[in-house]
Amino acid sequence: MKALVIGATGGIGSAIARLLASRATTLWLSGRNTEKLAELARQLNAHAFPAELSDEEQVRQLMMTVGALDLLVYAAGAVVRVNLREMSLAEWERVMAANLTGAFFVLKHAQWNSPAQAIFLGVYLDFFSGEWAFSLRCQQSSVGDDACSGATGNATEWRSFNPRAVA
Image 1: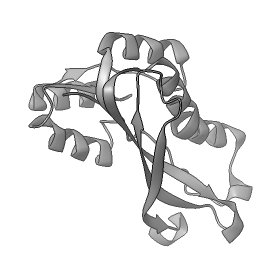
Image 2: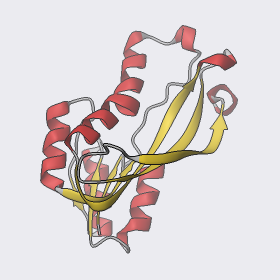
Image 3: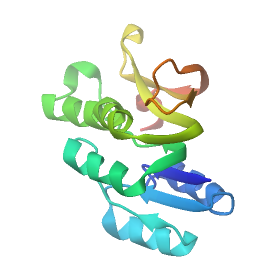
């Protein structure tokens, strides 16, 4: 099984990478922190490819280098622990780049073995609470050769939290 963990330098991503290390025939790791990524790849005997997810060309190169996947785990994400009304445009763009734009670029350029699975762990905004709250959700889909066309899946909510309560 060839697996790729995107966001491998974060807490959830590195934990998933450690779990997959003994199960994947070939394990690829990607993240922005080059030093942390290289060390984790060394520890797990995995391949490392640093990439900035907001840069489509870097994501395209990552996906071309990795090749056809059996398992994709998208564990990248960004959280800004401020009220939405206090958030700057730069903070908003950073959150959107990690949580949405990167996922779009990955799916756009991914190659799949058949059958394959894609698991997306993400941070979703809760505008209705009056606070800048997030839910951590997992979306798992079976994907075919045609980059998720006709994919089916269901979301499972793992936990919700208000960043002001944990800050």
